Length: 132
Image (cartoon, rainbow, N blue to C red; front, side):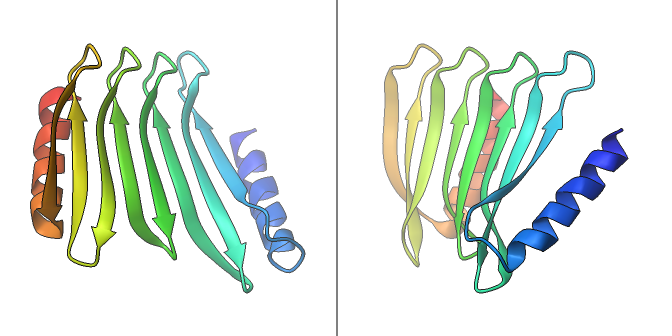
């Protein structure tokens, strides 16, 4: 059944390349409780498929992360705690860095800072591994 769905999605994706500018998406589910695990959105522009947005979900159904891409490059990323509170949001400021905001599990704002791309990658991984 899953393979049939993937084949159908690929056929629809290929068909829509020449006929539409609307997004195409792929949904995956958690095996044990059937909640959505991920949704990946693709944009079709100038007969090219580009990654648009990626949403990941905790096993309880709450959103875990959401990442936006522009022209295939990461532009904005957000993380949520398992209780549904937003934990982090990083957005591309310019070609050199990002602005990141952090919240505690209860929803209170913790801090905000500007980071270079390399600092953002290191801090993001540390933050994600520590709290998520």
